[in-house]
Length: 136
Image (spheres, rainbow, N blue to C red):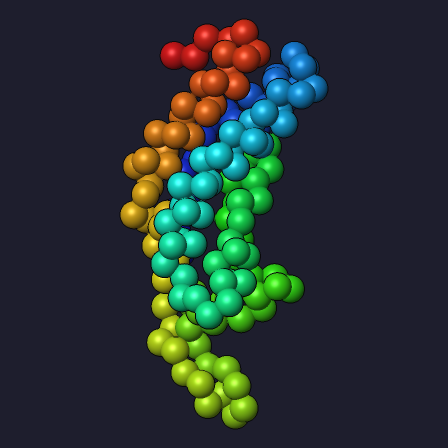
């Protein structure tokens, strides 16, 4: 699975933001969603299409302390099969090579990791500036 980018002091940073202004943690979450679009765009462009539902199901679902990207759901319950592979169908007759790191979302993260980290850093700095803070 993916090695995560950890931001030291993020939880404390969000607590302090909330004390300064209740809307600032929301700006942080929106910044995380903007950052996640780098990986989302990469993944969406590579998902195979018949109807396009699987590609449209890939979305950023960030919180104020984490960036998350999810695919599938009610609209495309077969998405995990497309991304990770496995066996499905009657008697598991349809086979797709299983890849633990997937083909689309994690691949996008690995490929775009340095760009992702740079944009994430910029978004954190932007939120800090909105709060009137100076980052080193």
